[in-house]
Length: 297
Image (cartoon, rainbow, N blue to C red; front, side):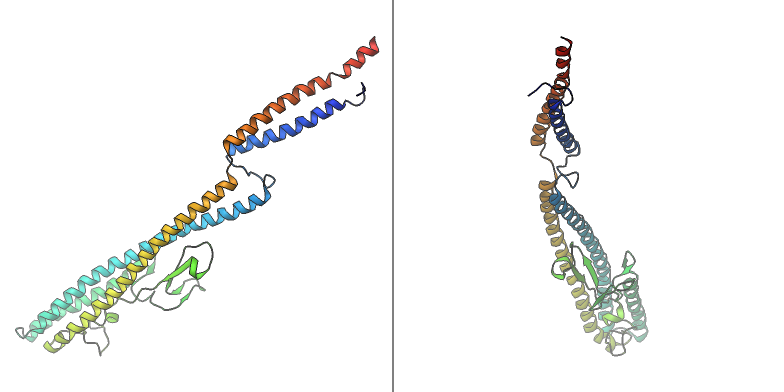
């Protein structure tokens, strides 16, 4: 290579190598300081796209777990209220049994019936007052066989959404809770005129009420059993979602997170190359001085 003044090719080569090494050093520094292998789309365009989709699914699944937990809390609220209803129905059957015997006068049966009606009214009050986050649970609000979420307020059975998509088999199912008012259970003065459990004011009515109250207890137990099954299903769903979220997080980590040991090795290599390039650029920049020495003699 000739000794020239106008173009210092060795300095240009050293400068290019310095630029490359310094750029790689900056990339390694960014990765080590952030803990991420992909910080910009330029680092891995395909990996970035896959990572962001995984992150959205992970966030959706984590929210789905919270949604399912909220549904469990709602079911427990309804079940707790029905437990109190159960106590009232047991007391009503006790009163009906008491009024069924012939050792009480009509006035005494009317007194017994007044407590019977008070129990029925309390059942209706509980059914109308039990709510979760403003959603009434036992008054028939969720007893519909269909669901519509088109309006500001959804109607029919309640839809619990926990998946990252909108496929029925994978992402949601419904919670349907039967009406638990006294009239719906067929007891109390508010029940239909044909209901056998309307009153225990006479011995005959009291005897007929025994079977009606038994049917009411069975109806209430079916509602509670359905709620218990739904709660167990939700708990299993939560367990499955948590495992799914963990696996997605592991996959996202493989794509996104930096291998510190490997990246540190790369960092040291680029650091050495950068320092060497700086030293060589300094030496190359001093080479034209040799031409001055020749010119000066």
